[in-house]
Image (tube, rainbow, N blue to C red):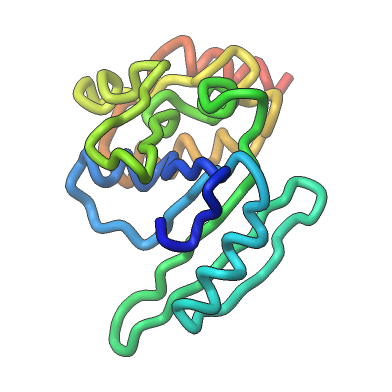
Length: 167
C-alpha cells in the first residue's frame, strides 16, 4: 500500500484469495491495478530487492519474484484492470472460485460478484462465463490442475463448455 500512487486502486485477485479461503499456503499473488501496474511492480521489486520482468507491454503486465533464503520464491504479478470496472475484470476470469478480489485498502472485505466463495464451500469448479474456454483453451488444463490440487468437482455445465470448446 505504501508504494501505490494516490489515484491507484489495487486489488488482490484470483487463486491467492481462493487459497487464502482454503487455508492453503500462497506463493503466487496476482494484483490488478486501475493504471500503471508496470510502474508499481518496478517500485515493489526495488523495495524488495526482487527480480522484475515485464511480461506483456501491450496488456501492461509485470512480474516480481521475491526470494528469501531457504524459502520458496513468491511470484507477484501486476496487471492492468481488464474492462471498465473490477466486476468486468472478475467476470472475465476463468472460474468463479478465482473471480474474487480484495481491495488492499480494506483487506477484510471480499468482492465476489460471481459467488466464488459459495463455489469454494461447495467444492465446485464452475466457469465464470460461457466463453471461459473459448477465450483461452488452456483454461481446460487449469481446470484439471485445480481439480487435482483441491479435490473439487467440476460442474456439469462447465464440463460441457470445456468439451464444446474443443470442437
